[in-house]
Image (cartoon, rainbow, N blue to C red; front, side):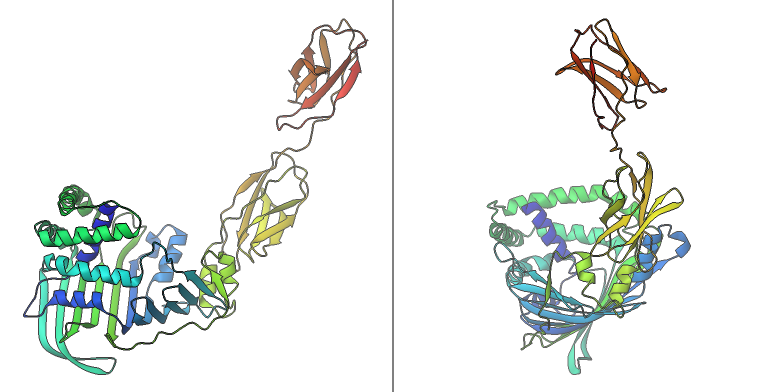
Length: 508
């Protein structure tokens, strides 16, 4: 466990893109301040743009997802009252319209309200064995000072001092940092960081101590040493270098993929305003027709370490975290909810179909509520129903055993589901076989029965013969001589295991 945890921590620190002081501006201090922040208020705007040609996207459902997410905008205001209590409020803007949301979280629960639903979703926060936000913040404050200084400078970085700007109407004088990191530079930056960390005994010791504290909280008594972490770094570097050729071949490390950021900090090195652009212009071939991704993020932060009051959610009715899709959809306004329309724009789930026998006059199963469900035999519709509360039931005429029935659903938006095929099960027993006269000299029992059925002949509890009915409906079964006056029972059983009634014959 500690090996995975170590790699997660190292990756998290590396992705902070910190560096040494430039022009007297202590950039590492900015990251340390972010980790130690007790309260704040912020506003963030995220814009996503996807590049693709519709004709190159062969998967229709994937194309729907791309069309849905392309040019999406996300706006949110966050209020952090303390390390464990915060609220968020904002909206997701799609071509179909805006989807508002609210989120509230404290030590006991997380509550989410989406698109003005009549019920919010309430998720209990794990207490025993869980990590509170304050615990995470404490770990960061212990870990970062010793590790973050080992991060190398990006190749492209500039700092402007004595810069004037506004945040939420407040005039601020501080510094502006511009940094650019291109994907082809990431391997050397990562390896340099790992080399610095491997040679920093103080950082390794603190990192080992932090990992041991986290694993101990989870009940794991495994202890890791600084020397073991150094060995893990060595092994990781070997594995990373082995993967590099394949990563380069895939396009992941193409120089056309980049991160560019402008960060404005105040005189105390608190991050107050930022603009970040992530561009992925070279994607792996298996991207399904997606050519590029551009993500733009704008953020402002104010009221740092000042009194901030969170916004609670005004709902008295709640859904649990394991509520079904139908339960959630029932809380939305079908006429006005953008989210409801978005969810319903995708193909409904594949309907389940309960077993259908040749005696059945009903087909039933589960599927998305309000979908229309159809049953077809070839091109002929044999039944139709509308699903209610996630279930459907339709009347049909009896079908012959072995018949293939295709069942599919169509939702309110006209989207068709996949079509499962169910075969009609034979539940009809064979007709009672006829039996020709049996005498004390008979060695072959003959008669008529259902084609391909198996004929069983018993004298009391003893089976005395068995055979198959031929294509002409006739059977012949060899038996030993039976005593005059004894009783012989004959019945048929088909391939589905259905048994006919028995015919009783007295040996003459």
